[in-house]
Amino acid sequence: MLAAALVSAALLPVTLAFAPDTLPPQRIAPPPPDLKEWTVPWPGTRPRDPFVDRKGRVWFVGQEGNYVAYLDRATGKFERYAIPDGTHPHNLVVAPDGKVWFTGNRNGRLLRLDPVSRAVSEYPMPDPAVADPHTMILDRGGNAWFTAQNAGVVGRRDTRSGVIRLWKTGEGTRPYGIELDRGGRVWFDLFGTNAIGLIDPATMQLRRFPLPDPSSRPRRIAVTADGVVWYGDYARGYLGRLDPKSGSTSEFKLPAGPASLPYAMAADDQGRIWVAETGVTPNRLVAFDPTQRAFTERIETGGGSEPNTIRHMTFHVPTREIWFGTDRNTVGRVRLAPANRPQADRRSRAPASQNRSALRRTSSSTGPGSTS
Image 1 (cartoon, rainbow, N blue to C red):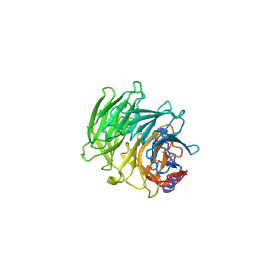
Image 2: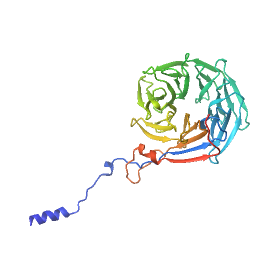
Image 3: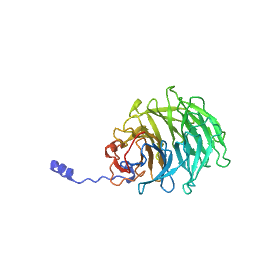
């Protein structure tokens, strides 16, 4: 009888109650990033440094073709603008008023294009030795900050007075990438040496942050919302992190190691750092998540075995898209999944590294690709 009672008790249904707030927070796995590239219809012109304006047009320069142009991504059509001969534009940004600012990398000028009238205004350097304005940014006041690599100069054009001020960074320092932090301070790489530079507009003083390894060569730079400065060590194949408050640095080896040649960089709205590994063919975009201290995305761009160097990238916040140009004569973008999507089916999020094989890839071509 006792044995029968025990068996009957074992067969009784048991209900377990869980408090709703004890379940761990879960999110659905986001869809993989979506890659798309458009072939620029002017072969061999090195389209680069795209920037999205308020109308959604994607502006870029043709460094070897000596033009400024935009892509209408809705139609896939391109519009080209003539600029002064010998400019060889290197980089551009679009101001809030829609004017397009770009650097004259071989004529020692900053230039501004009015897309409506197609007129181009020129602003020559005050020192003729500064012949190669390189990368440019605009601060909140509309002032243009820029580097000049071979001249060893960082400059600022005051939007009200039109005066251009130059800071010499030292012979062989090669100021290269440039970015702003949220406080309006200007950060830049000194590609010819192992240092990061800073100009604080409050004092207009130039400061250097030496990197611990003498062989480091920082090329591009990004700043996250927490004020941390990130740089790609082109010579050694590392992503570096600089804490401006303490001056301390830490490094993370890129997936391709010394062969990675990290070039273009951009920070997204989740604090991840995207880096183009240009030492691998085709170039690969990798994302570093500081919270995981790991590279969580790896995306191969188009081109197969063709060289397709990605030199500069921008992150467009409204669309969560990373835009870039390639030496294969394309303009491309990676669209990221919407951030912080709620969990619907209680599946745990798959590691981001698993998304690589699921990358959705589309392409649009208006002509053959080429290299220069």
